[in-house]
Image (cartoon, rainbow, N blue to C red; front, side, top):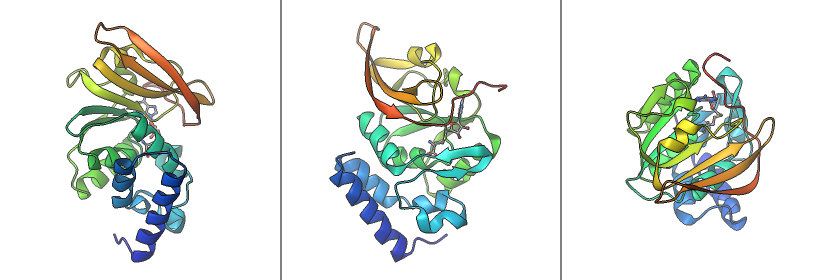
Length: 212
Ligand code: SAH
């Protein structure tokens, strides 16, 4: 796969636009500027990959808008070396951005086609993420607790199991709601109680259970 100067130029413009809108800080935008988003899309969409748009990926799912990826990444307040759990690997693009920020990424996807595709992509890009094919409602108890949890599908409610797998002082960013969602930031305090803040509107594909 190639990353032409045209794509690189379009990507730089997109990142500048996101910066001007104040969506994310330099580290997140620099990471996004290093990752060829068009590689995560079908070739028919390559020329549009650096517009702030969501696109269809396999299994009737979508890759999130770049502004949404930037926003969620910023809200996570990640630090290098942190353990982060992502629910909804999808194309693997958001996962790649987090890996590029130097975290230890754990990510779950329930569609086999996307699990396989994202695994190939992350390996090709040289990232070492722990990927699971399964149900994100269950999290990854074997690797818990996590410093951060990011949910990239619309959750009908905040899964209890994920709250349990968050470290004290950890942060979860999760779109909650049926149909459309509200982006919610949940912080677990040192005493194990939670502080919740609603941040704005979101529109993700739904978070589904095992057999739906
Ligand atoms: N982060 C992705 C966004 C993909 S869309 C990206 O950058 O491309 C959301 C993804 O969540 C879809 O791939 C969908 O299959 C997945 N998903 C939905 N419910 C899930 C669940 N219970 N467990 C794991 N993944 C789930």
